[in-house]
Image (tube, rainbow, N blue to C red; front, side):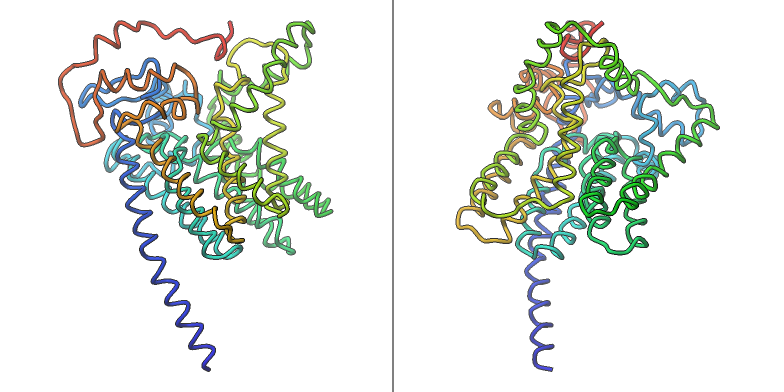
Length: 454
């Protein structure tokens, strides 16, 4: 009886001590999201030719029409208003956020929904880590997530990009559950949950092979075949629905990967091919450092060195790392091809799902106290949130970190845009036309060859 009472007191004390962390994380995400809205939204602010919404002169990016098209489709608008979109396959995010968009409009509604989605993912992942590694590890990953710039990149936009971090966290948890369980009746729901994340963003090239590989490493051959098939059922259902409705299944976005496959089949002049392959080390380093905004991969690398004799990666993470590396090599070893280029460090964002592996490396290290680790984690969190605040505060030294996640324009573009249109989060409306001359003077956007080849 005494032991039970003592356990209850400890549990109550632990819950009470968690409240300051919970309140702090909620406040931090709220502030960070608001200061990543309006003209401060990183996605359009780093673009060479952002679009300016006429009412309050907030910034959106050039693909705005593509991303609001799924909402028009869901509301029954004529197909000519949405049928051209290249992101209709990412239907889960607009489906879930639609009530908020109808209620509060595209910008405010998306901001509110994205904040709630991000907080749910942070606390859900914290609970997941807490059950496996303990409270210290859970708090570590929650604060790192709350300050992670990738969570704020599109948090104020009605874009499926906002779902990348939450969907990746859910996908990792589903992958881990499918690996850990000894019962197929539990593995099947985990595989279905994983499959649902594929409808939010294009995560299947990373997580589907990882699901099969993690099962093979446990010598569960049948599961390695069955679970990926089950995980693809939501996507197969969506393809069936779209085909019945006459909605195109291919577009200029999805055809890129057919172009890459075609380049391998067609072959190329060896000297020309070597020019592409010689850029591989630079692309690897740039993608590793900037797909997750520099400071998190540096922290994880330092942690791996400090704990080099400890096992900080489990089987699902190794499988996921192999999958991500395979996609990277597939993209960057391809012979030359025309169209959108998936090679090079300019598009580091493709490999952002690696952030969950880096988080788990740090989480396992946090479960084994090291005198320098808390300081390193705190420094990473502060620097990461400084990147989040770069648009609002104007921190030129961190422009490179923000811009090189998706390098469609020089890093200086961020400051140029904000100097022209002001540093205004949602709620600060400007109805005059400062900055319009800059937009006209830039003319038609010329895509650099490293992005697109004709």
